Length: 307
Image (cartoon, rainbow, N blue to C red; front, side, top):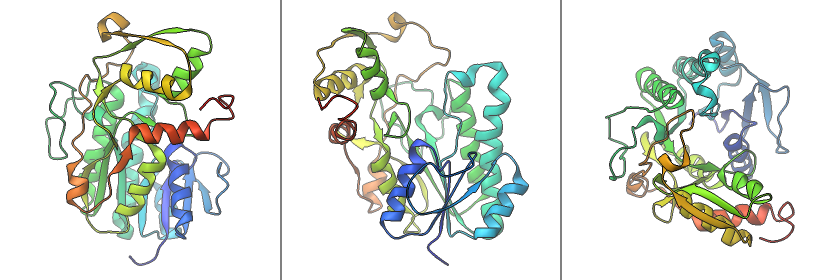
């Protein structure tokens, strides 16, 4: 690497903040970028206000800081809202145009780009875990389509890149399934949760550690990364959340059809084959139950000390 500086888009987001925390703890100089006027975290890092949908602004920022590595965490992630016709141009601008802008600017300064992708690029059929080599893409929703188009832009523009596909993300700095379950349980002692969508959670501090590890190497390519611990349903996940949080909540398993349609279709099969991580010498993410325990411990004050 020509220097140790990392440039993190989406620095104020759920993954971006944890990634900066991880890099700063390693003594790595970071530049954070996001739409906000200032960095929301407490770590010492440079920050630039940046609209990634404007190529000139992206190119200027990267030429100014000349980072060795760019980790692109910025994205439109509101899956149901992405289905609204009024939002589609904005979603495309961020997830497709913005990603291509980052990739083009990376090429200009010969930097390595890491792009965070998703299981939603696949159609979610079958039961076989998706591998990084699978190319039978068929997104079920507009969010997934734009993330696929962003991924393809990276692959088209660059030779040196990491693409990391993740699923079921949760962390301290954003909305997620765990937080939603605990909030709903404040008012309800019985919940219906789907049991026919299968995957594995991804805890952002653990993912941040992996991304930092990856970017200390040149083992470029496409990887799948979620926490270990096997494949589960959202129903299984909810039961473990309430068990660890000490909540007496009855969870009823239902099919997606019984639960009712959401604006955006969700894949039934979100199983991701992560064997390439170990084969490449990267440490797998810890068991998702352990990750959930650490997440709840960090929120113990909010939970009234019950975790």
